[in-house]
Image (tube, rainbow, N blue to C red; front, top):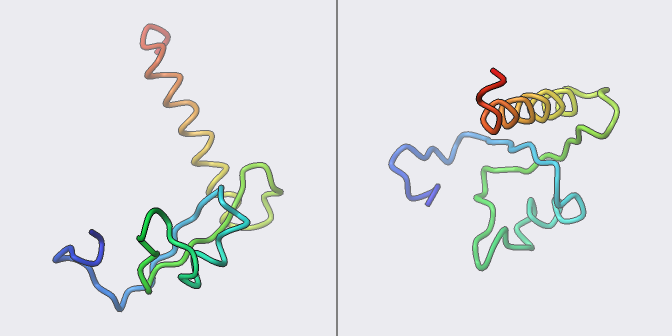
Length: 84
């Protein structure tokens, strides 16, 4: 679906930060393992691992920590609307 979209630009390099599947990221990035079923990561995409549980010594770890905290707070707000 991504590569068929009219706005898709194969010359752009796109990194996706993930905090799972660490053991398979290299295989996904080399297109040796499908993401799901028979679908592989598009050629100009790369998965990059980061973790909120790791030290915050990299910008990716800092970003995923921020996203994790923000998402947790937002879920609390949505599930407890009277406490806003």
